[in-house]
Image (cartoon, helix red, strand yellow):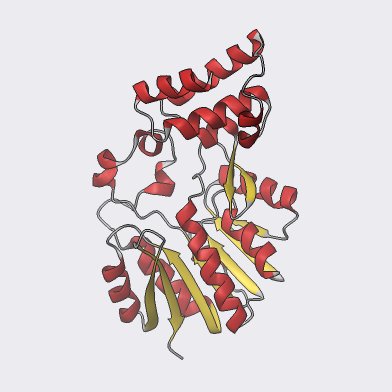
Length: 276
């Protein structure tokens, strides 16, 4: 079954066909992925075969594995995901690493997550930092419902707010840490994306407003000026090749800034601090 599943997905041109085959066959058999190789001689029932075929057909249409299985791991925890909500990425875990390092230097008792999505950042930071106040903001009610479910299941104390950007929060105490993985792909670059992303994940979580590539960087820089506590830090995920412009905008806003590279050498996270 594993061999045929991999061959089928290779023919369909999906990314990581072997990994996809293992995850989906494991799902059909009710096993963890690593358990597959401990049971290679296990007979397969007709019902299991039918179940596996249905999952593989969906993947063959480039539906992301995370949407098929309904879950994705992020920073060692399993998060529920569903269509209409951005799938957590491994590169976003760099924000958590940087937040933990900042927390060692200056404790981050309050956190604001702008664009919460599945809740992977807000929930993880609430648990990893032990923050006493975590506020998560998103305009999508579907994303907020999913994030609330993940927070409840993982027992993370997070306040969820629906709104279009940090201006929606009104008057609040400043935050020690602000994080965001905003839409940063230019709409004209959509054709170059993998079908798994372009055809399945929500456009509002992927693309910058047409004609304004600086939209979210400007708003997040303004939020850093207005809502960071003294000594606080903001961490913003960047797209490929965006660091130079992001640093320019930070300087224009009067912020101290630097870009951090991810494990592939891409300048992935912008760190912002108030100059005062």
